[in-house]
Image (tube, rainbow, N blue to C red; front, top):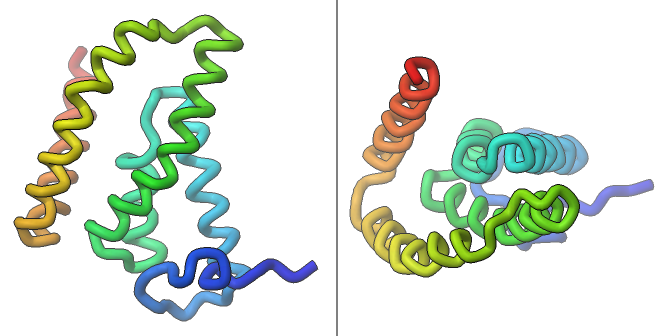
Length: 140
């Protein structure tokens, strides 16, 4: 069975690299699987899994990795919420909506800021956020 080249599916996967197309698909499948598992376990996946691995494995810039991750999160988040809520009863819809409404303004603002600062600064801010969250989890 021939897997389609990633560029056939998306038009382009970003900066070129030396991997074969089949290898690229398996890497993308691994990223997606990890993001799904982390989403189900911890409610995270896009920023903590997809973005760093797209940067590391595919040489995406921070902006391209973030946008691609947000596109994937649409499906991951929807299915995760359905599983957590519909199967296990772990979703408080009212609270979810109260979080989502201001988050819409936040994502527009965050995207605008990200487009105006150097990509390296975005990387440093993201790394600092992950370290701060790790320290908080360890100390709490």
